[in-house]
Amino acid sequence: MAKLVVKDKKKVLKAIANDLIGTKKRFRVLKELHILYVWRLSDVPEYDDEGRAILATTRKLPPRERDIYGYDVEIKVWRDGWKRKNKNQQRRTMWHELNHIEVEQGENFSINKDDDGRAIFHIKPHDVVITTFEDELKRFGLPGRDVNDATILSRALKKRKKRES
Image (cartoon, rainbow, N blue to C red; front, side, top):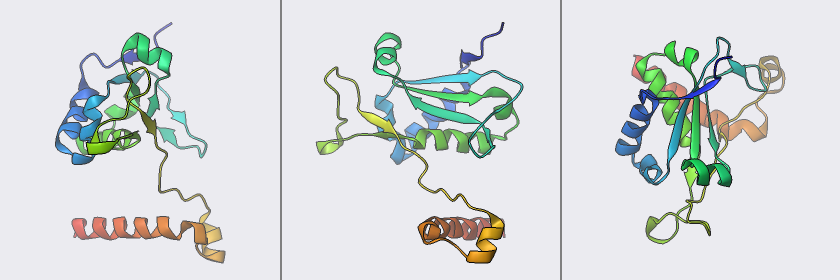
């Protein structure tokens, strides 16, 4: 039986991530973490709770794995799905996954460490989430809880339309 997950030995994922970490101010703090980039090998995607194909995931490795393998975070990408994306979509995917990693910083922006000297960070969830139905929106309008998210989406749509014109 073939391995389901393999390390990105050609460093395709790491190259894109390192470019983002090195050039985007928001990601510079990630230089302090050891990130493991792996491919998920399968002909078929995994799906989220809403039935959407999952291209990539980011997870914090448990302390034992961090100590044994020397990595703090794992970014796992579905290889077949990745190959179907253009360079810009691949870069966006990596940006998205890196954005999940939030490092805890103290005074002078130093990274906080736990008692064993490991960087303290967490995996942050998506901060723009709207789960509803089109006909519900048509009938009742936008729920109050989704107004902020809708405002963010509206700005992004305007930016996209401006870029395309």
